[in-house]
View 1 (cartoon, helix red, strand yellow):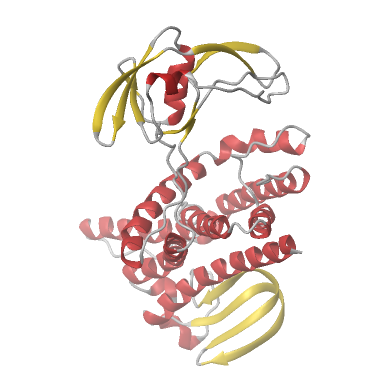
View 2 (cartoon, rainbow, N blue to C red):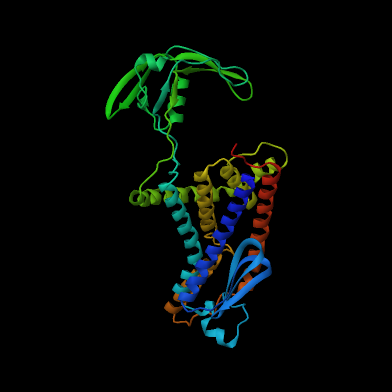
Length: 397
């Protein structure tokens, strides 16, 4: 029951995010003197609507986002005589750009507000890989073929050498390590005495550790011999901030998340093979994209488990993706319209330098073939992602 409630709440959160994106376009258009004919939440059959001023507001049956109808968004739009002077394509470049960027800005703003709320409640998780800070110390257990570990007692190599919980290892045999995985790799691959450079409460120490050589099983059943010292990673959980400190912390987190989102977007074409493998019965890569259904499913799982922090972070991440995705210079995305506006401005500026009058608006009919290709490829990718989420979904647990 909690899963279903969380699923529905997350789906509604997605709808609200898209609806607010369209609100950004609408409010910017109204503020710059353009005419907004309609603003609807959802698609399909109309449930109800009302008119306020010159704009019709309403809700439609399918809660899959929303739309904002601005008069004259392109020169192909049919206009009433009173709409001609207020048509979007006839407005100054800066006005058109503000309107197109406003929807994207709304997604970024919503993500920032969600992250700020998260910073003051559940706390912000660490996006970067954890530093090599020692948690618990103890003996080195043996590993079974089922990848489980046996019981052990007594002290381990690191504990006998004098390492303490809270120590941060900064180098192994003089080679700097900045993350826990680098520390693990450097330790496991070396035989003989290990020399750790340790930061303990701001003081640098040199600790020599004699590791134990043990066998560890890989997932494919093969065995390798490594060095182990009997340490675990210190818990580096979410960090909670006060109202004032939350703002700069959220800004840094937001910038980091935006960069990661952009990097993920660039890698989308490379994920086709992994998605197809997931659909055809292979293992689902947790790093593959998810559909609206898949995201809502993850939202439902986090809600059912009481993981509000993850629920909010997922919704914030989705808003970042919507914002960054809409920046792509492809029609019918906002980025495609932005590219057209910038092209028209540059073209007319060059014509002005040559003593020529401004050219008319871009002929969108000539851009339709490119638009159709983008729509077909994008639609096919979305269907593939949806199929993977139905057949072989990513799960939190």
